[in-house]
Image 1 (cartoon, rainbow over the protein chains, first blue to last red):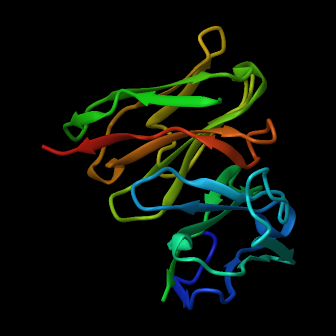
Image 2: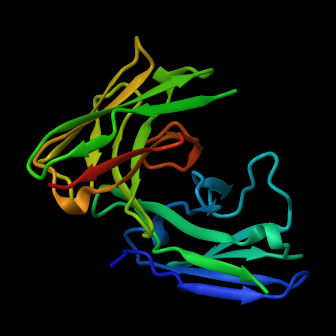
Length: 110
Length: 121
């Protein structure tokens, strides 16, 4: 049971937009930065978003992040088949003094 | 190019011990917190342990507290994870990850390729 809650799966057609939610509490998302990671099959995770809404260099602006209260959202526009992957949110939990990940969301581009 | 290379994984019997290493290169290792993250077969990512840049502060997931020890040797640019009293549920690919912010609580900008630990009799 993950501290952060994500939907197990989302799907959309190529070219469309999808959002992935990440729900937590005051000790984690509510008071700490959120980051998002993409994991393609058989590879290590890659950061897409950090500090709630910032993109590292090289990450296209099709990927966006936002945070409101104790929830965060990853948005992906102009979906491509290459976006099919597992997506994870992460943050720090001040009560646990530990990092936490969401359970992951599998994105299918139909 | 920043590189993180894990080693030390393998097959170990329940109750046994195993040590993992993560060698960093192309960045000032001593300036960044480092973290271990694991992924059981077919499962999601699980944060395991982190250490501050100097090694003076360490943090653990409840699932490994008291059994795993994280440490680092900044002179060798190497991160370690000593795993004792291993259980079947510790079976996973173990990744080391570099902090993007420098802090233990921060995001991860670089990840290693992972090393597989299998706990089985």
